[in-house]
Image 1 (cartoon, rainbow, N blue to C red):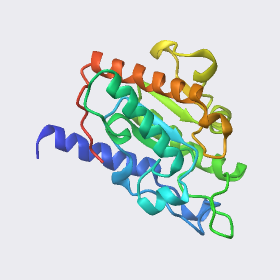
Image 2 (cartoon, rainbow, N blue to C red; image 1 turned 90 degrees about the horizontal axis):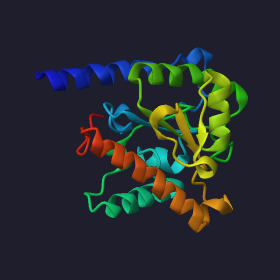
Image 3 (cartoon, helix red, strand yellow; image 1 turned 90 degrees about the vertical axis):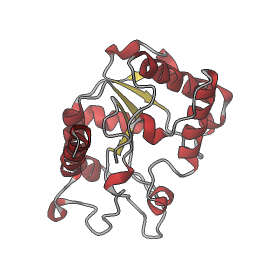
Image 4 (spheres, one colour; image 1 turned 180 degrees about the horizontal axis):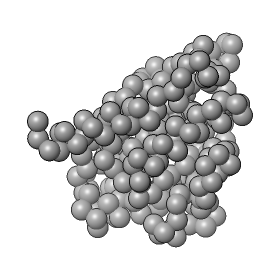
Length: 218
């Protein structure tokens, strides 16, 4: 096995362990629907994208951010990449993708519901391990509520990209409005412009730091 493949295999194993939790102490043990290990994108990427929790459609597709909100993120990444006349990458090529809550919280009728306090607090230590293991160059947090919970649990400060714009990579994380189809703001041109600008900055940083063609090891 080559050095790169061995490193990728070791990283996969470490991150799988970081996401592993005890069913005995999990408020979501009755559902336990998670994304498979290979769906978390580019394990060696310096950029991390953190959602709130797996959604029903994305779980069915076995692919994070593949519901309506995820489609908007992917579309704006395509717009940003075309701005530089570069090959259109996927979210999985650019980011290591994970969630604060690792299992999909569902209502009794099978629809998505927000995680409750005991759920996101129970999962926070696993996200902390992922962040610590990976030592990411930049963390993007989808959703203000999600960012507040991560801040409350882990003490990670974040910049509101929609209000404060890009401040470079000297900040721990950027938070942006979750691309929820029920949020009127995410349907506005301003939201799309902001999101395209955020992805553009990351693509430029990636090119300047020799990551033009990232290695996806899922």
